[in-house]
Length: 174
Image (cartoon, rainbow, N blue to C red; front, side, top):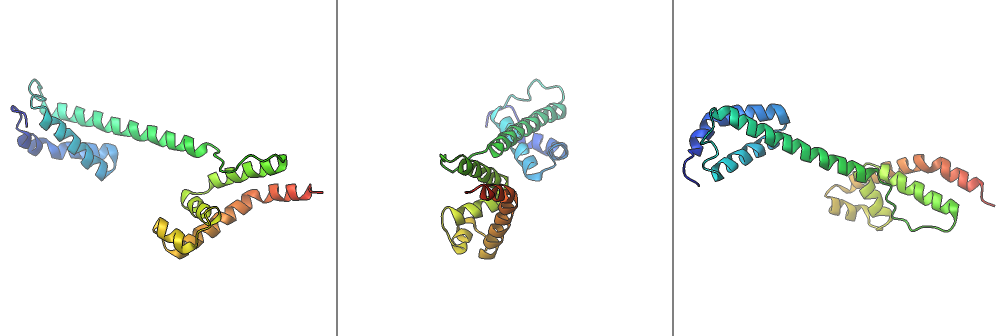
């Protein structure tokens, strides 16, 4: 550790108030612990970080605030990216030459995208990978009954979402 900073003294004097401040900002204990750790590691690495500071507590709170804001921005960016990917209508189906079949494939891909991720995973593994509920349960670390329930709920949602389109396409067949 670089000379010039008594990190133990700084921690003892300020960690509790900084922790309370960060917990109020993040509303999340693990995040608060991580931010406190990052802050004091940064201080320990830079032995002169507090050398010209007039008020240690104010300076440390500002560092903590900046770290919390950075964390929230990273999370917001990650969440926006996740939402954008989830909103994209990604199809696992090959294009069809028949326009009705293509429409059904697009609607099915959209309906699958609307399922909650846990149901979508089970439906995919059951229908497209041909796995048993026991195999799905082992892969996803859930019980076979939970896998079967998620499958049933997922199929119900798909059926409800696609029923009108299916009936319409069926009625136009020669």
